Length: 176
Image: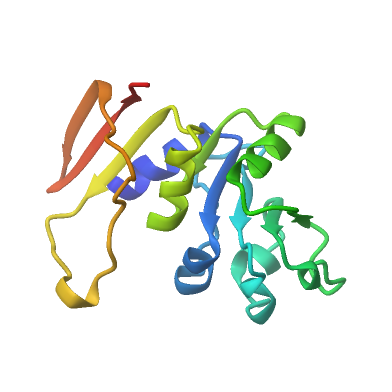
């Protein structure tokens, strides 16, 4: 149920964004099972250029959807990358530069599936308007990674809470 819902949610957005750690550790395809002539663009924030050492990742090799990599490392602009992969060289570490690029390229909706570092950057930049969190009633203890801990309080309005086969989905609009 959660898997299908996430795929339907992904299909509603023009792009899906992750950070380089998520790309390297999870090796996701970032595709959706919903049929579309325009699959979401896969966006990877990789400031240091860590993907250069992981050129076999699905989103860099499968050619199933456009992939844009945002980096400050010029060596990622490598001709070995597939034709669907575009490298955007950032001048600063300010997330607003990414937002500006997306705006200039008419990307109006982004589904962020990144880990805590990317999620904090998105929230801090005030780029996010909606928030969706899936909670699984399993604690990983010392083997787990810290979840999103924002720098400021976040209040959600128009809150939705769903129980999906024991998993919780919490969604709402960020009240600014």
